[in-house]
Image (cartoon, rainbow, N blue to C red; front, side, top):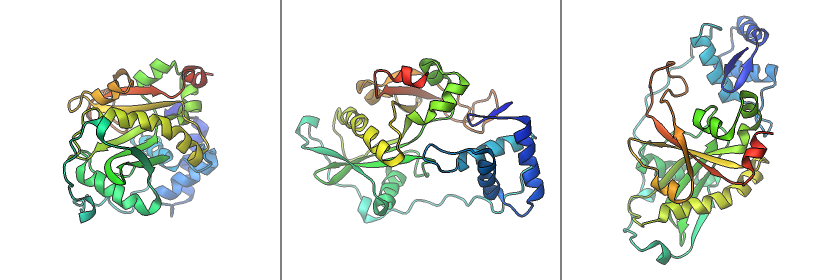
Length: 284
């Protein structure tokens, strides 16, 4: 048994993948990942194919010499500078105390607003814009209909040793219950908004609203949130002020990094229980 992306692959299953590649020389990598998902019945909680996870798993198998993937049909284009418009231009500074701001709301990003969310993140977030993989929800934080901050939530990390130890997960338990964790992948307060304690207030709003929104979208009610904070850039103060729990740090290996070597920044891992009995649910 070999484990990739949280799934056990038997010798027989890897042989099936090798045979699939050999018998379908016209397939490109995306075709193969979709067909492997169907053959192995690898599905997301909402019934869709776990296509992206399968693609990463097959890349790792290829790197480990277990399979031979066809050459990619096209090379990944170089990232172009993000194009900004007047819609995301800086606004007048907001400096009021948080309790004098007026009503705040979380607005779930709709399809026709997606490009605007992407533009804000591309223009002002230190990581720039990259698509969030898998299940996701994105929000604008509004002050009297003015965007002052943005949030993005997505699927949990496949494996995170400090989290898994804190929960008490075995491999099989993680595989079964991972969809019950949601990752806070992006959090941006726009640079002209300089309001003390605003970040922790927004996080408190998010943990109340997101579970219902996630249930409506994916028919799953999460019981735990996670986030990763680059510890050479940030102290995670706003998360800790909002009662998130620091459980340790990553090793900096990344998804496809070489074993035993740091290839990405080390990050602190923080968790927020959405239910008091989260551990019972995640370990049953």
